[in-house]
Length: 480
Image (tube, one colour):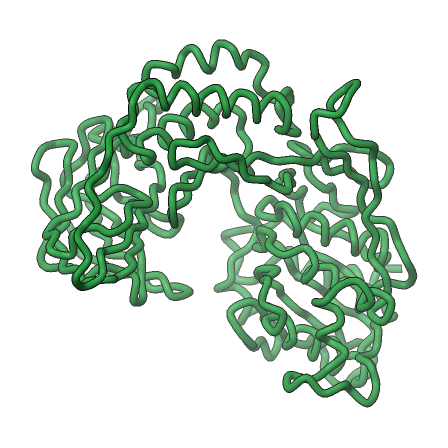
């Protein structure tokens, strides 16, 4: 039995065809990979008269399942049902418009129904391209040569040797990696093909902060596998009066109007848009003025973003200038190729605002008028909920709250990846982004591959009707 399903979540539309067949095996095979797309990821000035997007996999695929993910104005209009031209080639009929910008994904976290005949879900693969504007001739691709690719390979090797901060953490044989991929890299005829081959090679570094860029398109190198300790569908049953203020902020209050009140704020992303976190700041202000002295800050689904935004929010809880991280940068400097370690610190809001524009923006209203009184600082007890989805700037936030806010961190260890990636132009239409720093706790412990450990471990039970991590935090406030 097969059913056609459309799944909508956070603006994501998934055209998903699912098969009910059950495949059982004792050993897992390699997941299918997309090896070619037409148009390709990152293509610009694509012929708007194009009638089909073609996707080629590296192995035979189960014909009854598919997940073509996307949504909104960038999702191409479908002109019919996708069909399999061969066991490995899918044709998606589309109708494009001149000048249109398009994006979709083959499989996505919420739907992974492209599967091999052995039942393995295909790797999540994005596709972004632009159609030629009206009156502009579509660009004819100029095939790359082995010579230009060899120059790009040399540039990539130099960047890895001189500038990649975690070069030796996982990969021990870079010579072997380059030699094993040389034929595919030299033989690539388009920037996208070169980026895909590079991504496959660099995946062995197991570093989610390495990626490649071709025009508007991003090519990942490593897809993390982890079990989240959060389910948004449990919030309504767990947090009284839960409200979503915007795509990034959810709030609620336990025991409102009583001395035992506990505020709850979920932050889903540290957006670089200054106004995106104003509702969260306003909630802190409202809770302080309501006399709430206990608060839960939930960042379990937050994968990072803009560190200045995270620091501006942490400044509402910081009790004084606090060093939360030490870093050193791989810059080729003699004798060991590293800069001297330097510190990063968070300060209370007024002091933070001197150097942090995200914090300064909270001292004025949405119209730019200076507030009569600055937002109050929270001076109560704080629990911050964390988990394996926490990465990068959100791990920095955990450290800000541990050292600056004196918060109790609760949940599971964070993902352990913070790289401050810097671009390296390879000269053949591909840009490689490599982590540039080694991020450490103030005592010098490197968090890469380890993560930030919670003070209190709290398990998440996916079978429960309530969020057991939040319940553990609420109970902690009443413990002696």
